[in-house]
Amino acid sequence: MTTILVTGGDGYIGSHCTIALMNEGYDVVVFDNHSTGFKSTGEALKDVKSEGRLLDNIEGDLLHPEDIDGAFREHHIDAVIHFAAFSQVAESMSDPGKYYMNNVAGTMGLLDSMRRNDVRRIVFSSTAATYGEPKYVPIDESHPQWPINPYGRTKLDIEYMMDDYDRAYGIKSVRLRYFNVAGADSEGRVGECHDPETHLIPNILKSTFRDGIEFKMFGTDYNTRDGTCVRDYVNVEDLADAHILALRYLENGGKTDYFNLGTNEGSTVKEVFAACEKVTGMRIPIKIEGRRPGDPATLVADNKKAREILGWEPKRSLEDSIRTAYAWERKKRGLTSSP
Ligand code: UFG
Image (cartoon, rainbow, N blue to C red):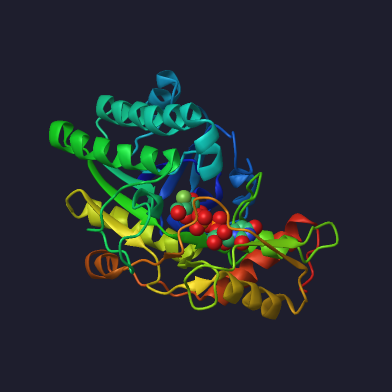
């Protein structure tokens, strides 16, 4: 049995990936400091029928070498998938120290522990935020990486660090640059739980509930087809599949590399809003606001490289993502029957 250490395995994307790994027959050790996320992958995965097992759910911090060394000592780990990070762009601007410490120093702690414990393969969650303001769209992997906020810079620093750790210590990495991740587990076991929630789809869906406030649409005067920002929404279960493929790529002796994960297609904020009204069958209260600082008009991925080298094919639609995200929002409120 192959065992994978998943850092941040209790977070939004990490928990979906943990399920995908177990479904593919991998054993998983989750390592999470539980500072964000929803602290219950173990609980959520109790009833998952899969070939792989959740061997352990360790509460630990990558900044504490004894925590992460302990995880490697206790389990024979074959490879690591590294999600643990802070990811709020606005917070990274007001408190960059928190981001450099947790994301950059934390990853260094992880890589050094991998060296000490002779683990040489890692899949890392990078981001489209490493590209900054697009010079052209769709964005391919050779697009310049000039991030415009500390969050993006921490992820880019880690990408460079991973190149250096490959050259010097032979740690092979795959960096997956996510575009806009959306949706939830199709069986409703895990989903998105950010606090504060800044992402578009959960914020629109929240406004369908009695306790919700009206949805605030940021900026309708962009140079796009309807004046609102265009983003490339990739389904979280499709994203999890890409991590399995990246792991197999490394298992088969693949070299250190990086790939965009997106769909090649963009949707405007107005189109996403209309799709949410369609899926929920509700008129959602809305308020038009000014632009949110730092939002580029258009971000769309060119995903050719991931298709060609990893064999990845995103399968789920934007409506699939909205449907599962809505079911998850209802479940969080104890509304289990279908809408
Ligand atoms: N938006 C609204 N109202 C909201 C939330 C978002 O109108 O309540 C708009 C935003 O202004 C933007 C679009 O919806 O035009 C998408 O916003 P998100 O916050 O959902 O996503 P971002 O594109 O800002 O962020 C994503 C990732 C980040 C990453 C960033 C890189 O979620 O992790 O891309 O640019 F850093």
